[in-house]
Length: 181
Image (cartoon, rainbow, N blue to C red; front, side, top):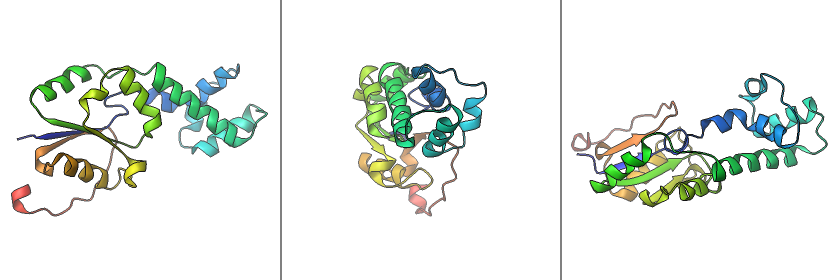
């Protein structure tokens, strides 16, 4: 029997994945510049600082890399605060879980300052008992720590807990007693 649910936020609750592919383009447009075709593809594997250096050189930006990173982050934060939408059917699903008294938490790699305004604006933050972030738990999603902390908070065993996650991960399975499987 399911007693608790852990949701990822980006791409599962919020239709936010496009911003991660287009943040550089959106930032350049805010500066009044027209991005070259294929910019998103060129930047997709770069870190924020690598991307900032690339934009500075390619578009002859008269600012340092930290200022560019700050500008891109502001673009991302604004998208979440004012534009991002819920994935289709999410609110209805959350309401159904709440009606069945199933505990709901979130586990995300995204920083709280980025997603929280969106959840408040879209009136769905009320469904989550707690939101766990990788930064706050000190562990990314390549390890099960954030999910185990969320299940522990809800008081649910892994076999009683659903996880909705869109990232492809390979978690090393931990041995559990037969009663937990």
